[in-house]
Amino acid sequence: VKYPRLFLISEQQNQLIQQMGGYKDGEWEWNLSWRRPLFDNEITMAVNFLKDVERSVIQQNGRDAWVWMADPSGSYSVQSAYKVMRGPIVDGIKDRAFEELWQLKIPTK
Image (cartoon, rainbow, N blue to C red; front, side, top):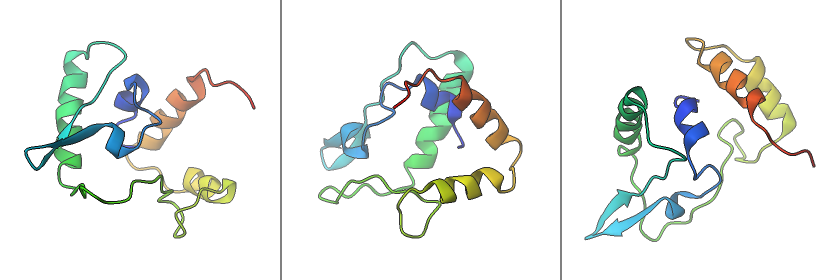
């Protein structure tokens, strides 16, 4: 996870891409929503995030669906998640992401 902080403060964590923006004059325009105003360092992160995602082409009439990138089938499994967790750590990013993940208040099933 490259931007765990932005994910944590997003109001759109479970939304598909098509729900996070729209086409205006033939161009995709992001409409991101935050739980609170961004701090200065988060504004810098958001700018970098937008630079990263703007490299992707959003198909105007394309199918929008969740895909688990850690598995070639695109489907989530506990086994594939475990492999991701046990994989190499890049610049400590995974550690920070999991620290924040375990602090989330998520109801049990």
